[in-house]
Image (cartoon, rainbow, N blue to C red; front, side, top):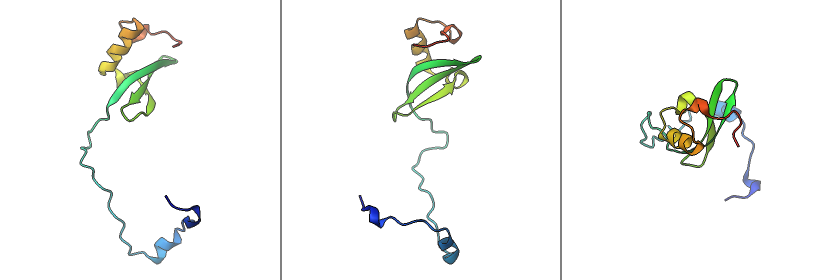
Length: 97
């Protein structure tokens, strides 16, 4: 923590004054570029016209809407369909409760 009085406005001109300043390189956490985040579960679905989207909750707690094409290989989709009592995503109701 720090006191708000220690905050200062950033001035881009300082980069011109110190033009030889070396910026640190971003740290590589060792995760490969093809690393995939863990998907926790599907929370819901919605139809936008003819496109089907699913609300995906990731292991870190974030949620995001993803198109069916991005979710069709997920095991969680099978679980979601089973809970909804459906055999295929096209059977999902237009309005999700």
